[in-house]
Image (cartoon, rainbow over all chains, first blue to last red):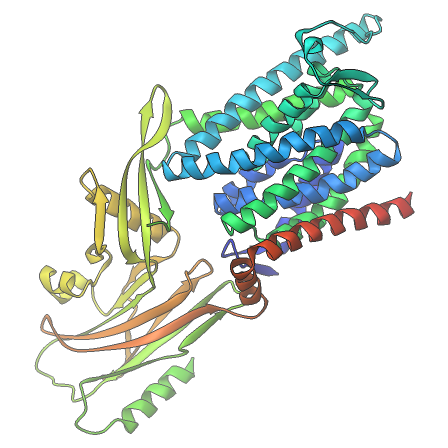
Amino acid sequence: MEIYLPIAEMSVHWLILIGLGAAIGFLSGLFGVGGGFLLTPLLIFYGVPSAVAVATTSSHITASSISGAIAHWRKRALDLKMGVVMAIGGLAGTGLGVWLFTYMRRQGQMDLLVSTSYVLLLGTVGGLMLNESLAALRSNRDGATPSRRVQHTWMHGLPFKMRFRESRLYISVIPPLAIGLFVGILSAIMGVGGGFVIVPAMIYMLRMPTNVVMGTSLFQIIIVTAATTILQATTNFSVDIMLAGLLIIGGVVGAQFGVRVGARLRGEQLRLLLALLVLAVGVRLLVGLVLRPDDLFSIQMGGQ
Amino acid sequence: MKGWAFLAAALLLAAPAAAEDLVSGLSQDTVQITSNYTGADIVVFGAIEHLEDTGVNDVVVVVRGPDANVTVHKKDNVLGIWIARDQAKLLAIPGYYYLSSTRPIDQIAAKFTLSRYEIGLQNIAAQNVVSHHDPEPFRQALIRHMQQGGLYGEQLGVEFSGPTLFHTHVPLPAEVPTGQYNVEVYLFRDGNVISAQSTPLYIDQAGLERRLYNFAHLSPLSYGLSTVLMAVLLGWLSSLIFRRAD
């Protein structure tokens, strides 16, 4: 049965949306990421106006992250204190991101901003993760147990130190705040939760133990995407509640299966898979930027 | 299918003897977009009265949607990357345009007549164009895009049943903009418009869709909060259900 989406102003078969939501939700539960970096481009490829795709994806990420976060919370795999600190940075970043979004759209360079930031970010993050997880897999095979490296970096010289018990860390609040801020900006301009940035940042920069990383990142994503949804609804009127509802119903179910499968896989394998996925999307978008388009012209409805 | 013919016949009989040369009507004057809307098909029908045998009669039906402002971007290669650079803003150009005629329009009338009435895709004009470049390629690109999306079309779809009764189908795809449309019926004789009629057609969202649309635009904060609440509840609910399943 086809369903008419009131804000996107198009009709779509409801099974397609539920299936799409389930697939993205599965990945979300598996990797502890929101899945927005996949869902936003997919919706746009499907014909949903990009403003609606970006804004509606936020609410989908909220829902699939909640079921994931609760699953992690039950296993005590969540650092609430760290999550709150990062969410504070994230809220500031969302405000900043929406301002940047409006500014770039007025300049007519929104598409370029979105595509290049996707390519740069996914390329960098995916490359780093691929490198790291391959190295980890190799050292495991050699029989060497990877020790928790406690290195003294510049981060330890920063003020406002705080103890994060679940993460077994005593560090300054500035790095988690800054990571939150950066991810908040991404959330607003790219329609992503930012898990693919938070997860590596927590592992490689903050040196958090891998088991609390997933739950904590999901917690911060929930706060930031909920704020983004409300901000997009009030400034751009571009949140489609019907589209969101169908994607979410598929998404929350998929996320539950994702968490279960993820618990059975080893951390290095998970990171390798995520790295490959992130790189694949990045390459796809890079191809779109570099290849000569079939039609050089594009049209944009509305405006003055 | 018989309905239009019956209605047209009724119209023909009801019209006073010495009225205009053209009467026309629509199979429906309102299209409601509801949750299972996948597009609609309306029928424009009519009759020519006092048909003279001397001369060539042609009927052209034009359905115009509400005007929209459109920005057309053209991509250029800058350092290996395709970037939207040049642009043209076409102000007040129809968001939907469908033409149906008895013969190809360039055989019906001269170019200046057609462009005066904006008959034919090539004669659609924006009220105003803002561009630093020749706007023509941008206008052509817009027409091409709208045709691919089914929002612009030109067909030889006007059929006569008998010497005076005619009808044509007008497809309205799922993506049609909402608002007031105008259905214009022109009667050409020997290349001149001798009669024309315009009938409004309303396309509107109805039912749940309308209410959601109004909710989103009239109280956006509550709408945003509701969306988040729905997301939170669905996420939490699934968590509960799956916990029991464990």
